[in-house]
Amino acid sequence: MKEKKYLTAGQFAKICGVEKHVLFHYDEIGLFQPVMVNENGYRYYSYHQYDTFSVITKLKKMGMPLKDIKVLLEQRSPAVFLQLLEDKFEEVDREIEKLLALKRMMVYMKESTLFAVTHEDEDITIRQYPREILLCSDDLENASSRSFASFMEEYISFCKEHNVLVQESVGCMIKTDNIRNRDYLNFSYLFMKIEKDIRRNTHIREEGSYLCAWHKGSYDTIQNTYERMLAYAEQCNLIIGPYAYEEYLIADIAQKDHTRYVTYIRMDLVD
Image (cartoon, rainbow, N blue to C red; front, side, top):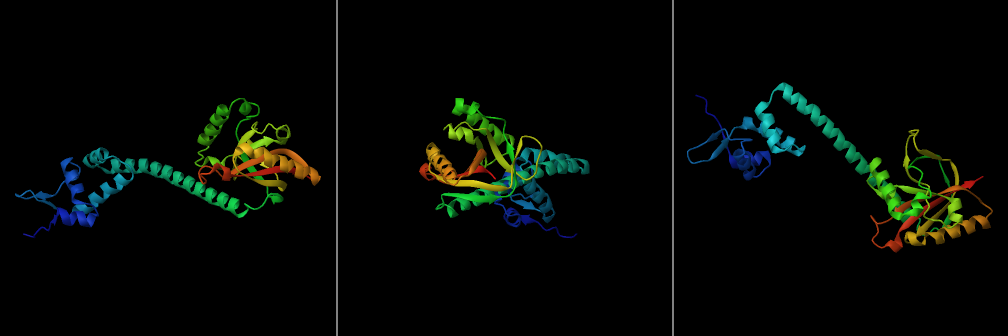
């Protein structure tokens, strides 16, 4: 009779990359049991069991509870397995989208922070920009000035609706008329840049010249930067367009000291 070869619990745990107590726990709950237990109570496993253990490990990594894995193994068949794969395909796709969103967030954070620190010595400039598409919130004008709490509710709702992970990637549009009237918190829209026009709540920021400034400090003092921008425009005979755009390059997520925040402001210029 051909001799059967078995592995001790320690040997099997080693080739599976786990501790022995994992095997003992799986045995106790009836999920994965040794092929043989000798008279001294020592557990032995067959190398044929490695594939089954690998499947358990992969399903666990995919977030499936051990009790569900146990049911699957007890009822496994090609049909059950195919249905499991279909369900897991959907879960994996969702996780991939989350990871891609996380990567986009990291890219934005890196680019915006580098942009801020490499231009921190600049003040007011005129810069050229290509055409950009902005996804906008509903009109907030006059509503946001009534209550800061209502503005924050809109802000958070907008972020959640569009799966925004970093709220600093959401900017604010404010009419330049409101700036002239020193109504600095009366925003018109929240916005975020998008690649394609979805034909819903979008605003085109046209290619051309923009009056730009880096506001350094907390938002409580942003009026100082706006006043300097308006004075600069008047001195240089520049015609200001309808909107200013605020982008929060360095804020709470990257800087503990609010007096060192950096807000990038762009104002439309009319040719």
